[in-house]
Length: 230
Image 1 (cartoon, rainbow, N blue to C red):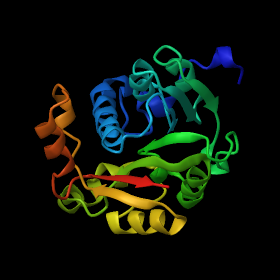
Image 2: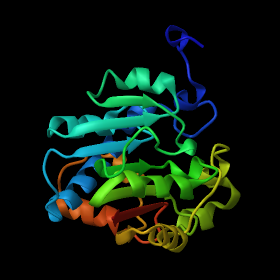
Image 3: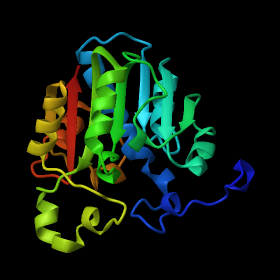
Image 4: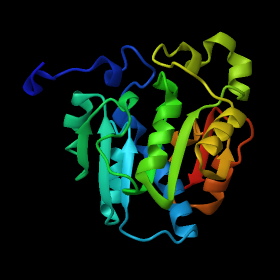
């Protein structure tokens, strides 16, 4: 399909997944930005670094890093999404299937790599994590979110839990299994939390320390939040 013919993508428009109205997730991505930046600031990582968002979709998350002067990169499998992303971010954008790794990039290239709700869609998420370990710099960071199969909501909802109903999901993790895999690849784990991002993100997000604390320490939440350092 030629680029000018890409006018519709059912995944991002919500026909085959629970990601309806992707642009309405602005508050969610703003929260991710605040949480990532907090860790970067705490570790005194260099300013104006180089960040890669894997599965960048519309580039909204990267737009926050554009504003603070970072060199931004995004990868996505959807040409439709990347065309939309150019309206939001100045990032260098790549149409690429990360099941094939990150061969687009040299070793030790990025200061930060983010993968928000991506690894559950992959047939071989371990390979992507290994590739992230290759392309992130020494002492660089990776941030991973994915559904928490040990969550309270999964227990309550059973087979109706959204992460189970999403047919694009190939694999689901417990916090222990994800931590184990990331450590075996060679990363040092800094944080593993099980936050409940929803429905909190329906409300206004501010850089409020108490709010961020409550989000990250909500017990048995539906997401796994993992931070690791090379």
